[in-house]
Image 1 (cartoon, rainbow over the protein chains, first blue to last red):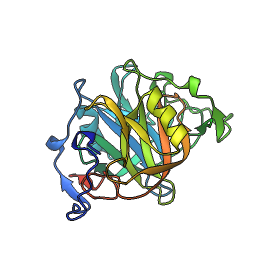
Image 2 (image 1 turned 60 degrees about the vertical axis):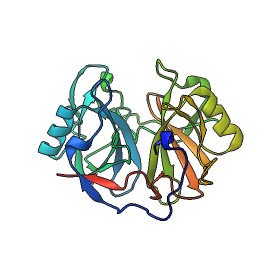
Image 3 (image 1 turned 45 degrees about the vertical axis):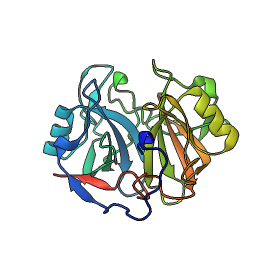
Length: 126
Length: 126
């Protein structure tokens, strides 16, 4: 959703679903990063949210497994390289602003370092 | 997933699911923002990804409808205020790092300004 365009709903002309766009259409931020939401392709649970740079995205496509950019370690992070809990990437979706990705994955194990299936195992108090 | 902790899998002690945490445990970034993934509570489709500050989160909880912070307009953005496509918030999930939220919502209409149900209507070329 692009809030700069307000909340106008163009119901007369919804876009074609699943059109594919080239990688050079993506908008990385001023740090060279793009947000990546990782979603289980089967259960549709959101497993984690991480960051990618162009190199980690290239490696993800090359390996067919999720590779991120670790902001804290400032290095390429092949998810599951140590734990074995890799994420096989089935498809990558792109949002309307081309600045956020969804990785639809088949996870080999829990996404979270705590051992939870998903990093989102808590809820906010009301 | 906290990459600073490496990819260690603590299988002996997975966390309790759905424990609730207080709002003052959340970690807003140096701009005072937190990433909010909006997911349809019924279909589990990821509809959009936006940002919240403490005030928009407070308003979200008060109204029971998604309220974001528009980075481009630098203002509070009540989703659907113009279009009518509000998002009723059923639950807010928090990740292990407490720096990303999932809003589980019942949308009143399409999330995307294009008229698409979800902003993620395109895929990346392989």
